Image 1 (cartoon, rainbow, N blue to C red):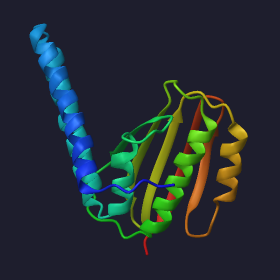
Image 2 (image 1 turned 90 degrees about the horizontal axis):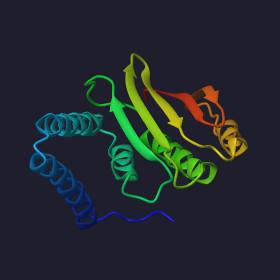
Image 3 (image 1 turned 180 degrees about the vertical axis):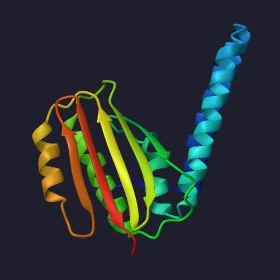
Image 4 (image 1 turned 60 degrees about the horizontal axis):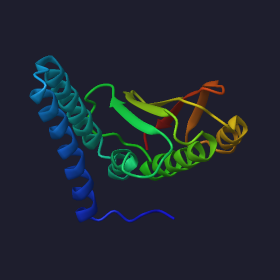
Length: 179
């Protein structure tokens, strides 16, 4: 069952993330590790820029899903990147968001818990739509479940191209045309 995220819940998680980052900066300053502090600040700036680019896609349901994913109890850590500042996308957001939620659920069922499981999503605007590159690295305990999901989710609204599916990696491209 999907959790309802109200504004107070979002602010609570966001505040918690910022406090963690500030504590990391303070701890490194206390240890006089100035170069590490600069690296942390650069990481924060990059993360904020990516969040801004994601928000500018004008896909609020999809953006909300990606932003809150690491706040939920998933068996993987999510990173995302919008490859260029492409402005708004004219896609069927409901299809994209529903498919991505289902993919996340399938990953949760398919990977070893408490391992270093990472999912990276790259978003690229192209002439006739957008491409989404999903790259998972970690320990997969049920490759068949992922393969079955990908086979079942082939539909005419989106093209899914599987580049790799092994015990340690799933790499695929999802193309969604403009509406």
